[in-house]
Length: 424
Image 1 (tube, rainbow, N blue to C red):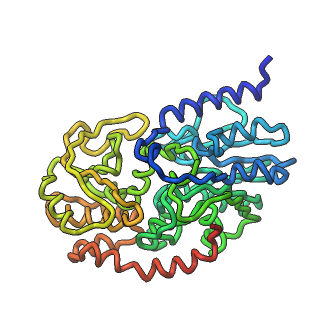
Image 2: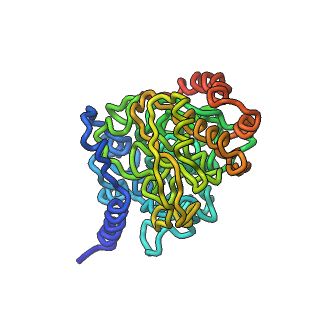
Image 3: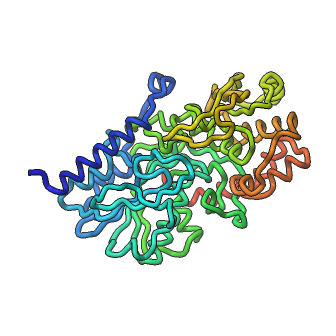
């Protein structure tokens, strides 16, 4: 006879298998490359091998989603449920839900219609910050989600709010470390806290070059939130800070619907800015952020101007695409069912490529060519950029290099602070 626990395990297994079948994409360039891979153990693997005693006799809450996999691709939820000595009583999930298939920005009031135990509770609905009632009878909170490495990616803001609420409830937090898939480079301006939002909570650059564990230590150590009872970061083994994700053995699972591969993750920090414009950022296609366009763009003229800028590590190719609603990626994208003309971004050297410089140069070029067509959403752009400076600099006619140079001192200051919290 099947026990209730076994039934739950079967249901969760089916949910996760279905999620992986929808979200995991093998990128031929990555899977067949000669890139040497290092056997990296995630914080989850290290915890299960060496520190299970920290979990004994405690009621656990796990903050996770489909990306919480061990080094061989098994779910953290299933690993915990299979251990008789572990009492997992609650699961919290971020934007995109437990399966990672809910489109960006879509509110999730109930993560699953199934009456499961442990219950799955959304932190992307009425409550983005756990309430004291949600933490009732919880002794320890574990955070285990794959990050992307960009400030406006909301998982890091869920981390901060989970820790903040844990401090108020006097509950310790364990963060299971995972790679920053796009390495340790730092790009972009520091967030001005006047422009704080759920796509930017902390005074860090757009690309901050830290793992989720290192960032958690900084958030607590620099008092970006009120003090918490205890923060424990379980580091990875054999990881180096300059690794790109495919330099590890870890299986790639789309961290969210519109980051289908590593190349997209590398491009994303600079090209997410187009979400605050009336130019399509490629949502509604299977190549989001890698292609940018609008019906009124002349791709010949745009590529000619961009090629004159000699941007490092990248080339551009003319393309046409027609955004459509995709249930598990983007609903009602810009220019739905209308053909867009634009360019595709192709990284040829990811070590030289600068995502923020490239994204800003694209924006500058379109603004220069189509000043009467391009519309910038002031509030959205300020939230993403983290200040009002980008809009002002574009209006003043600043070049992309001038824009990027304007925050280099801030980056240097951030890196000095960052050094205190680096693990690898």
